[in-house]
Length: 378
Image 1 (cartoon, one colour):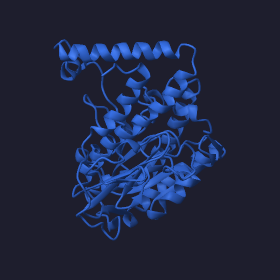
Image 2 (cartoon, rainbow, N blue to C red):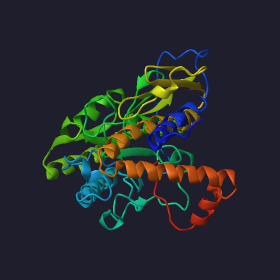
Image 3 (cartoon, one colour):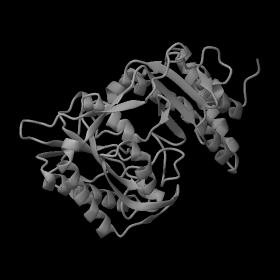
């Protein structure tokens, strides 16, 4: 057959990658539970210690109304780091005031900064940042390794489709559902920590997230701004908002005895619904796929397996972003030149692979080992 054009190559690369991925497991023969999850009573610590993990994102900060403030490399990002540190410190101070004996910090954002988004030199020195020699997933790896009694989430955002400031779930255009219920990342954190009986006791963000979290009425919630669009918000006065963050965190520790942890119902029906700029449309018509209306669903008996499966499907859905890239490139004077260079590089990668000249991913990873440390996110 004739060689495809560079533009056609890009189309094949983005849609073919979707079509070639295998399904995790069919949900056809497993009935969905009547409720997505239950909330259960928490066992309070008896050793006199109270260890609280603070997971921060970066879209739900006080003082913040410009989305560029949470993207590494932008002019406003350093200001975003200052807002982040101030919010986290207010919560840390409140947690200690409420009776916490240890507070740990984990990055749940991932702006692209090779260093933690919250600067160590600005962080309350009583708090300990979780830094490791190997990559880790803040949401799901920590419950499997850390001894924690309660979780607080700071600077969070509402879920996809909620109309909140920078509202999304996991990444752009992704709506995650557990047992038919669309969830926020805060609920995802709560479900993950619920595996070990640990509750989320505090959260902060905009008013849309507050509405999303009506499923968790014991959570002490602080609204720091009013979202007016996905890229605009009216922040509260920062001194007032941060005073509320401190007081809310203090109350959250005091109310630990009334908190609940989330226990997911099984079998777990995990779904990903893609909206622009993401897309799962390439799955349409593939035999054996539990797919309809840009939504892919599978069933499993294990929450970690459900999460890992959804992460893989996120990778497929994010291939839809390439349509925006194509639009941008084709509008440029040098767009055709870039596509030609891409086509040549793609062909070279193919030739190198078939000729045994391509270095394996494992070899590349080994060459990078020991060169950096990791602070979380996903």
